[in-house]
Image (cartoon, rainbow, N blue to C red; front, top):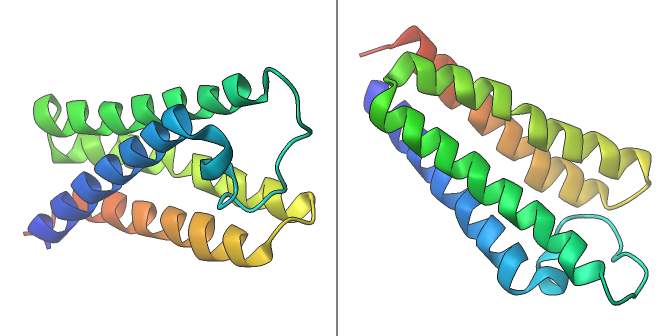
Length: 126
């Protein structure tokens, strides 16, 4: 089980880095799959969307750093804390009457996978 949890944590970290990079490179296109309508058009919208990208990249790098230098239990704790992000995204999308499919199918599933990997890493099952 430990190898599964480690691989899941690595996959999650790399995926959030990739999503963050997409927000930095093509912010408007990346936003379309988030589950909320695009914000009103304006000269600074792309820059505001890129802020999310930078934070996603940092979140993924934090997991990779802890996996490399902190050990499995610490990585599990960080993943568990970071699972709040997709839960928050899901709840905000639902509250804004955005796409329930995206809320549950993307953000809800992501949080469940993060919690599962975190529990396995914290428990350090062989």
